[in-house]
Image (tube, rainbow, N blue to C red):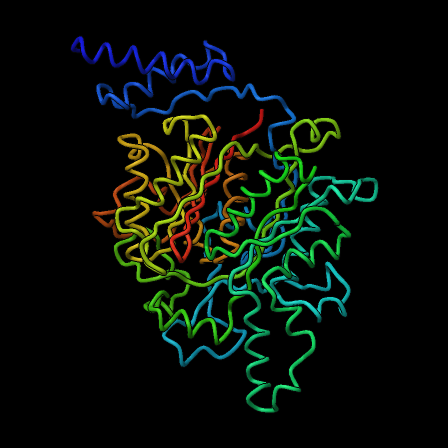
Length: 471
């Protein structure tokens, strides 16, 4: 190493130590500083996983996940969801909600087992959109899973942040048909209350009697992840003690299918073999497969969870958001915006890329998107990008749009909890431009401590969550 490089290393070391000394012990940070310096100076690129720094934040500043509820194309609840993922099964099938035969894409990930009456009064269910019904169901399951004693809590301090995207497509479709056939005065009085994008969040608050901070996020396919990240910030700044956060989407209608088909965003090659249609990173991928579902997480401070003896599933240690500023539907081909979101999330988590053990990819099975994400990962992770396992559960359940980030956060947390990485199924024909380790076709056991979940949406919004296993 030249004297100039030695001087630069010494200067950077001093600055980095000054930044972290107040929050992390010298012993814990030493090896990471050396790794970071080597990466910055490019004299020793790190390709092996690095040990995780023990967080020195006080427990009342650390946000943990204590409960999860999920409705997915695999079924209702965690057990069918996780068993389906780890078995590498596809939940994609021919659309049965309507006749899709006139559309180039005729398949989807339908939540066929979902029965709203299992979670709410039938009269209330009829007044809600399907997305709101699934949000309420997921919220009830999450509260039960977290052993959250709502009846003894101050419900002014329990908030809701649920993402939605295409709002209530079935209700929009029905209202439009009524308008054309019978006139505007015959439209259901429940149409507007069902179709508003805040209704999944508001219905959760109404059904559970929660009076705390409540809002919705509508950033397309990044929304579910953003809802979780922003909910953690709500707790950190003191606006709530507990947040129910996630996403819900029910976009499988003729209107939605037609709209996505004319965008040429959907897979059209495998209508006769639906299970083989969604194939992220595969050379024969030709678009995403729509899906529906919901996921809700219970977030609270570590100190609160410990005090009440709650199950602690994972800690949310990082969150990053960015914009591509490129195109309304196409990703930045170089992945610059996605890379920025990942860097911000890792920065907030105070970890290096080499401390990430698994990446739950956004990877929708579109030709452009999967390449852009691969390039973004390479930008952030360098040579280590070729070592870190990456997978996309969209290969099995399709793309749940606004709910995708929340459902995939659940998969990421379960991967940490069980030490098993779900596979990317249908990865049979390697794409030379997608040349990383995508855990093809078979789940993989691995000792995981830290994982990230990527979510990138139309309009160029990127959101990344970083989770850590809590020992």
